[in-house]
Length: 160
Image (cartoon, rainbow, N blue to C red; front, side):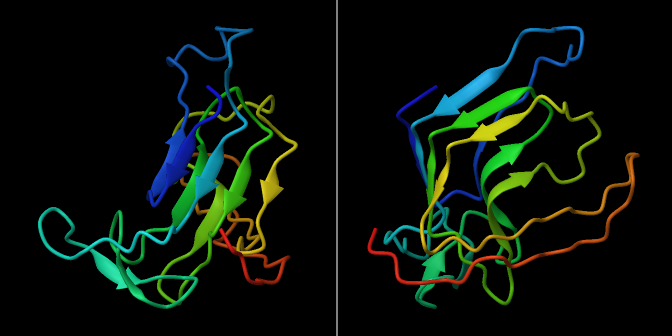
């Protein structure tokens, strides 16, 4: 899948295997040369099916939300794999006091194994992308790591 655009979603895109990994060796899914926007200038309007309203991360203006105001917005979500994310751009993923965001994140409460062959390469992050690494708590094995957010980049003006 290439040349796609994803904006204003709770989760922009998640790939899932057919459930036979690792026995489906050689299969993979790829997205390339695509744009992921956490919050566009489309603020939406209350009413109808838009039942969630909250504050935006960039300009602090009210906007309709894809899910409740505490749901962590993710651009690309890693589930099981193998996946390849390459030559994509991420813009406007800014957290609020109520909600975390991440350009790339993991499926929360994932009971499937994640392959070490997942690959993210040659991606670009706009200046309004807060760089957080999020390891949500999992009860499904592996080492537990408490919810941890590491800020590694400052936020600056993005003209997109």
